[in-house]
Length: 163
Image 1 (cartoon, rainbow, N blue to C red):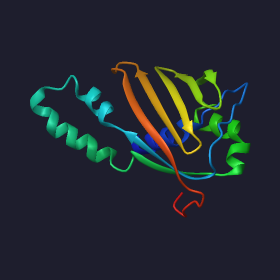
Image 2: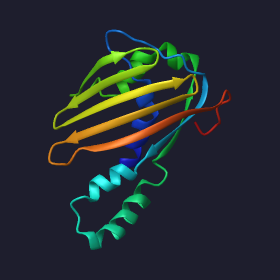
Image 3: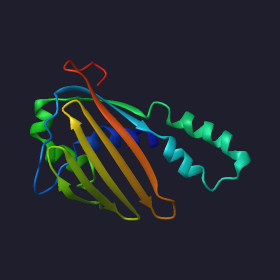
């Protein structure tokens, strides 16, 4: 389940839009690979664990997250044309979550998603039409704040069959 959630966030975070004003970034169509740096997440999760137990728990967490830190997505004309519907669905439009964009342009997006018991803050910079970087900060009730940093890179105009 963790892999699915992290993969969804990694795939869709670079392409979040505002529910009232949609600003679609100028990005290349085709295959995009999003890589999530889980090292800060793991370090934050292990902060309260006794030093002697950290190496074993770090290895377990890395093993559980293996594969979840890379995700492919095929960006097509249809996806860009239906941005709002896809993103509302991906970010809980039909759940008890509220999604709000505080800044949206062709080069930057700042947003938050508030769900019962948790808040996520998302910032994406569209470096150019083939590269974006994102930071996702999560504050869930009863847990320390965690941060995931992601990099999305365009790899090809031809999407693979696996995407």
